[in-house]
Length: 146
Image 1 (tube, rainbow, N blue to C red):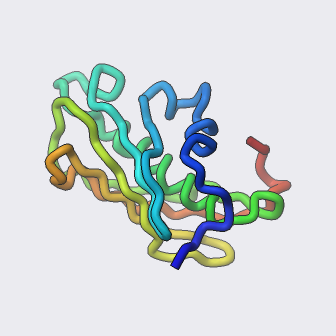
Image 2: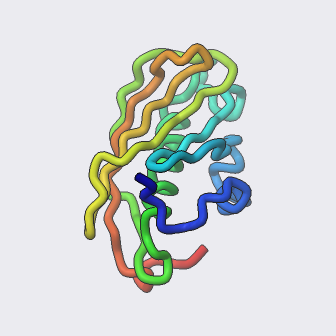
Image 3: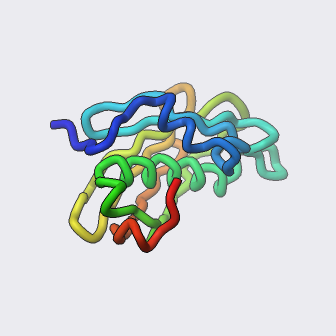
């Protein structure tokens, strides 16, 4: 069953990232299903830590991007917005290069909170990071506009 209340055109959604951290890290939204959102991020100098591995903070940035974008898509932006409350991440395996793909799926979509699970995998489909993001749903007037 489709959960989105907003248009999920990928060009429009990727436009939201102009001049942001997501653009700087090369994060791109790449696919959307009835109840999931997917995106990619390169593993290169922009996202490496000093040992040449994918930086855990970059994985968290990808996870939060996917989860918070998905959270907004299930809301009416004229009335409400989603803002982050908590994120956790378990880093399972290192990645040296290539591209990682994250997929956000809802665990709970309520009136005042949402919880999203984001799985990040390498090009071979192996789990790199698993994250859980909790979002607060607040009145649109409480947060700036896009």
